[in-house]
Length: 247
Image 1 (cartoon, rainbow, N blue to C red):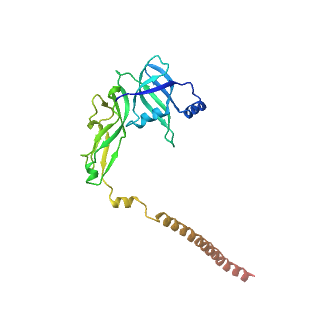
Image 2: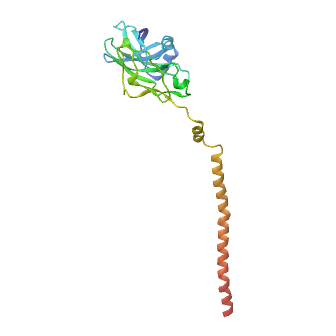
Image 3: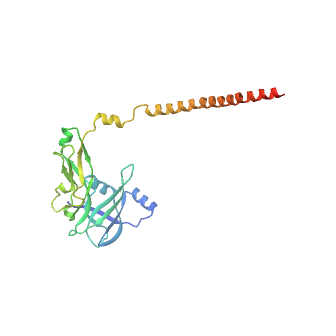
C-alpha cells in the first residue's frame, strides 16, 4: 500500500465542549498510539481527512504523518479506526496506529468479489458473504486495501475457504483455513417459501375460534347452574309432601 501525506497538529482540547468547538472550526480530533511512543492527542483538517477517505478503496490508509513542532519530521501510521456521525456520516474522530516499516502489522482487510458466480447466473442461486473482512499480517508497505476473490466458477453448494485464497505477495491471511468466506446457496423452492409464511388471516381465525369458545362457555355454565338448581328443587318436593302427610 502506498502511503499518503497527512498533516496533523498537537491537541490540548479533551473536554466534550472543547472537542465540539474544535469540530465546528473545521478540525477533527485524532489520537495516535503505538509500541514505540506514548499516545498523543492530535487534530487534523476535516476536509483533508475526508478527501483521503473518499478516494480510498477502504478506510485502511497508510499515512506519512507530519506533526507540527514534532521532533520527528515524518511518522508512518495506519488509520486504525474512523468514527462517523450516525446521521450525517461526517468524520468525528480518527485513531492512528504508529508503525515501523520493518515490523509486520495485523490488520482487518475488507473482502470483495469479482465476476458472477456460475450458480447465480445459471442456477438462480444466491451469493452469500460469510465473512466481510479477513485478518492479514504483513509489512506496512505490503498491506492490501482489500482482498479480491474471483467467484466466477462457483456452482450452487460450493464455497471459497480461507485456505483457498491466494493472498498478495508478502501477505499472510490469518484464521481457520477451513472457514468459508463466500458461498453460493440454492434458491428456495416456492413450496418452501409458502410453507414458511403464515397463511393470511390464520392468526385472526384462531382468535375468533377462541372467542367463540369463550362466548359459548358462558351460556353453557348458566344452563348447568340452572339444571343443578332444578334438580335440587325436584329433590325437595317429595320431602315436603311427606311432611304434609304426617301433619
